[in-house]
Length: 125
Image (tube, rainbow, N blue to C red; front, side):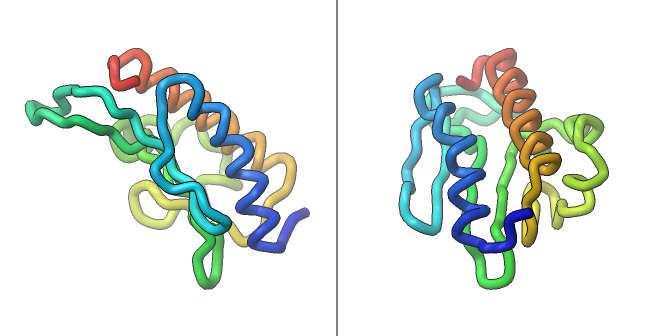
């Protein structure tokens, strides 16, 4: 069980990094923040966009924030989350993580894979 925020951040960032090679780019890659964006020109809900946010991880004051936009754009994505991950959801797309074990990390990795699939199907990446 990881409780050190730097270690939690680094573990989640390591799972995000491979997505930077399959169509996402990162704008911030620091010791406390990492994010992924699609730079495709797309139309979402009738609005032209030249970027789409996918996910990020940020060390905050009292937790590590895992921001996961697919759950915001596709609320049914919540059905794939296990109860351990779902109880950490604060708001529409931010998970507040204070402790990280293998089971929770597996759920995060599964969510990333499912979110990538949705973005790919929509042509957002």
